[in-house]
Image (cartoon, rainbow, N blue to C red; front, side, top):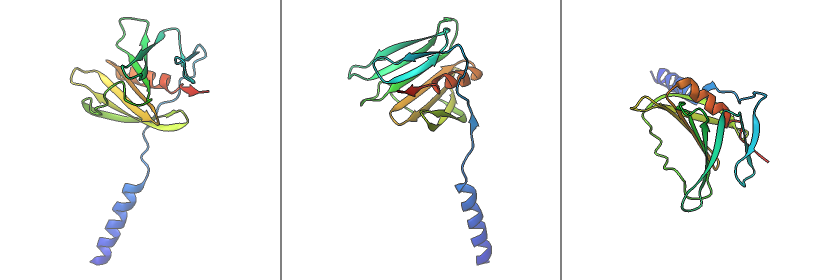
Amino acid sequence: MKFVIIIISLFLFICNCRSIEYRLIETNSRSDLKKIRLGLTNYYLKLSDTFELTQVQGKEGQIGYDIIPKDTSSSMFGFIEIDLGQRLRNRIGDWGTLKEKVQSKLLNHQAVWKIYQTETGYYVAETLIKNISSEVSSKKINEIDSLISIITTLSIN
């Protein structure tokens, strides 16, 4: 009987230790993207002409960047914050119902994005890598993937 319990315990331990594979979102590699510097930082993002980047600043000097489509009818929105201390946005970590976790490369690290569906039907995804936090939202789930693929173009020089 002890042998059976040991075998079952070992099996459960091994199953819990394996790495989890999430759906991979590739970096946007379109040829029409332009490299744009994020303010006075050493960070750069590649954007198409269909988006604009605006800088937002908090009271304590926090710096964030909104990624907004030029098409005003679009519900897409992206945000990147370079954390220099106090956060610009409150990270509550619970936007609604967790729908999926996906992965991407972000600044040469594996980033896991949590995608939520809010009570209003919007989709919100967020991740945190070192001092960079990112958030995207849209009414359409496929646009979440597009926004994540844009944020994965973030680089540092």
